[in-house]
Length: 538
Image (tube, rainbow, N blue to C red; front, side, top):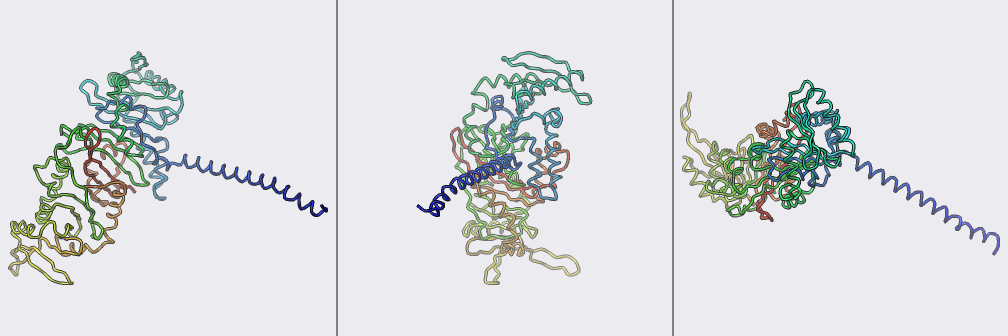
């Protein structure tokens, strides 16, 4: 072997160690970058919206029959950062400050100062329980600690400052757990009874009184009485998927707090509601299960057939209803009829011509409220025009046929006496109907009827519909634009409470609301009706 050949032979041998070292360094950099990105992603406030839903350890201290319980599963410290991250650039500071103020207001209701007393040590899970028992009515707040000393240090400072303010303390043991209770408050605050118990150094229970706290400790010893031992609740939570909060409500709370109609809330077979809350950008998504203990005593409600494919219209709100005639049947015992029937009847009270169509329709029905009047879409053969015609004739209306633009219009009018300088008689339009290839359209006016071809104007409501149907199969749905959504929420009691906690009006942040109810389904433990809502905030 000559000298040149020996050099050529050694070059690859020298190159291989160099390439191996370079490859190892590059791989290390890639792994480091991936690790940093993963860490940054895990620490991003946007991760707040991707929490797996679960029952926290505090659920062991929550009775299954509690009036209301709320398990918050995301770090409260990061809530303002999330609100800032999803808000438009021009509103980020307001969104952050608003979320911080709301958070402060929530804990202030329990007499706690979040920034001063809780923020340095508070963990990711917070639970609130409201009980409405005869002897032990009140609330229990469960707080987790990020470390084993945080809750203990807080407890020492908490009672020390209140003792200095004049609170008389009682220290005892109950079921082997130290309980501190007293009646008093910080200087400048109204006195209120409070009791605390520290569980395993990292779970702190704060209650509105000793009796309520002892009840929570009693329940924790009985798996057949607390939420953590409820197999049906565990299944429902798993089905709901992700969320930052889990809500349970008894029939009493559904009526008193959430304003469920009395006919549904006071049913003997109603067991309550389980719901998840999940932020999706600037939208708050709510999914729930309304549970019953036994058969509903009525045929299952049929699923909805979508009528929006070829629809148009300038809708302030849009409703898709299945079996509207059944909803209006006063003898119907199904919960959906008891819930939505009276509201539908109330809406139709001053729209008799629309009631003639809706009351005769087996569904599905697409109903729009427009500035130009109501607009309905039904299947081609339901309801039959002769049936609607007979109902409208009972109202004193007369049908006529008009031809134009390649289609035949049926119009129902009534004669109205004109007054003024030129008295006479005029035909006043009450309803109009036209058929196309796939739908039967009914309108309050010809202008409203013409809006059916304006698909672009309906797009905001269709976007809401697509978000709802991405993960549900509604039997009834209501899609509201900004103004009707604000009007509806403004009359809802929980919304007023949210504004109190936030310390400012919140309606101006509402951009739209979509609500849907699925057909009932039989599950282990009893029938359930899935509920869905999407609140758009800006």
